[in-house]
Image (cartoon, rainbow, N blue to C red; front, side, top):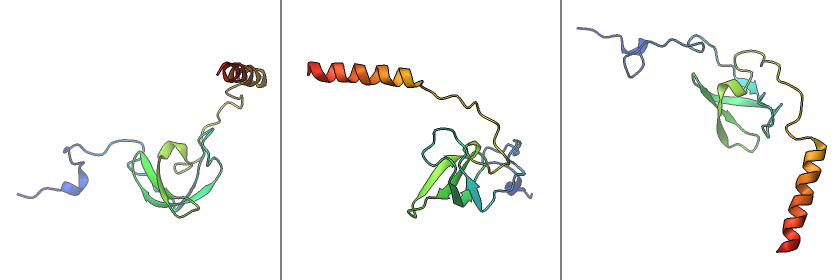
Length: 103
């Protein structure tokens, strides 16, 4: 009896998701908003269905969710608003100063 193990996941389920036929490029750009490497183009070491491993500029590798990159095409447009307003950040700084003054 022959089995085609390569066509199935270890659980014995066929591979059915939007990445199953995706090509992983040799380089990707980080597209995740607020990620420290946003906009950086990085070498792909290995690609998977939900995450890829990229080589950072210092030579180390990092596993990152595939959807945080342009590996499957252009990323969807994200809202351009900031997480905190300038006034909210000023209020936070005043609060931190007040707490520091008590110590």
